[in-house]
Image (tube, rainbow, N blue to C red):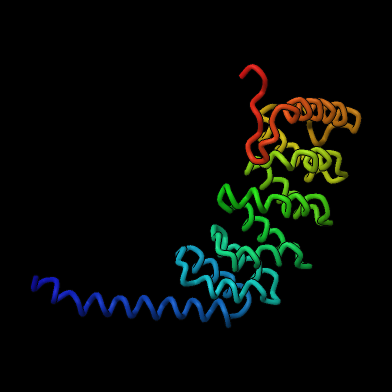
Length: 221
């Protein structure tokens, strides 16, 4: 018992030093310069403490696109309605880095919420003008196996940008659980033949199951 009592001042001192250290990191994130701010945000995000959410929420609207995008990444994994609104607002930000972080935020939601938010991600795939943003949306839709995204993903397999085509195909393969011989770098006529095979498989499965989140099983399995 006396050992515990003797250790209390040491523990208290350590807590105060830790608290001061955290406050210094928060101060650098909010008022530092250049890369120092981004490094501080990433350091806070690595601690995974909810108490830093207010800092991330504040910095999500920062004029610096790198700072804002990293702050949004600090909120990834949160299902809080306040953070969901931040993700939604960021989807329509003029800065591509911010939009990509917002996609990551929505893509990390739990199964129930991703079903609700899937249309927003599909909308980005359909309408965003940046190839990187569209590719990120395709990747997340594939990773979360969003069945309702299939029409948009198949359309993206015809995109002029090879990176978008590649990511869209990877997403389709993940959702369908099969390969149809599509290669983003193939000549247009070969790609189209593979896309038609994809559409045939999609229509066959869709007629039997429209589960929305989990793709139907192939016949016979």
